[in-house]
Image (cartoon, helix red, strand yellow):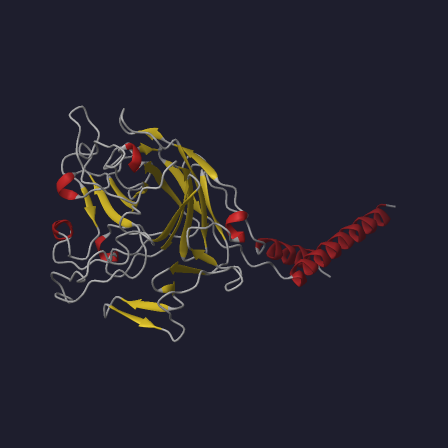
Length: 395
């Protein structure tokens, strides 16, 4: 066999081997939170309508629900035996997927001298290639699903006592510009009119973030506002569904767009704020699913979000778009309603990074590696044979 032909063959084989790219640490910082890839399905459970995606579906295009035959008005609690290996958004972290991930502890700092009741929050993250899943836990001595009218104190902060207090909150803020954030983390539980001109980013017109707000008083399963806190359903004020009942398809987190002017609610046209921020637009305010539970002094929150925004939100560029194998800047915040924390009063982290782990590459077939080994052995034999011939010729 020609020696040059064998060498060319081996070179071609080596070039087909998978290569791990080297990423410069100067341009891509190490992730502090990793959304590990797991090949899992996920379902959302609520006590009113059952399991989202199983017992019922919601069609935004028709603003209606489709119920399945097994639908009941009082669905029984779920067990892991019903959906082995799946993630169920019910505010309990009993699934193996969560147990396999060590929580990352994020320290929080007071936003004002009269804030900072929540000292830290633990974070876990998973993705399945098309969805991002997050789990949070934080200590809070009392559960608060009540939202009293806000009364500001002259010295700052909000009035609170044994009977007058506010909802507990959790905040997730995603930086939507390229590169590292150039502004400090900030959140607010209220929108446009109350936040106009109060955003500390007002000196940077390029600042832009997507804020997710967990407010169990309003959007969570079991709260007074879920699914409806009124006898007559609200209706769409404008758009193709004007006059039709406005339903909430599942427990969710409120989304807002934070920029240098205000915090804008991603609404449906029901609120004045929604119209001001996105005039003549229909938006979908239910992209972020969630479910929170308080027990024995601890809040547990599960969150799910599709990688891609809803088709109605996508053209606005006002909400996050995720991809596998990417790194994102994020901050977390929390508020204790029993301690009078409300609006932007609470505790907040520094900017952190979160990476979405890519699915593992398909394993190379064993026959490929056997072939490489055989080729290497043949090459070694040919080299040895050639050396022996040279020695004989020299003798």
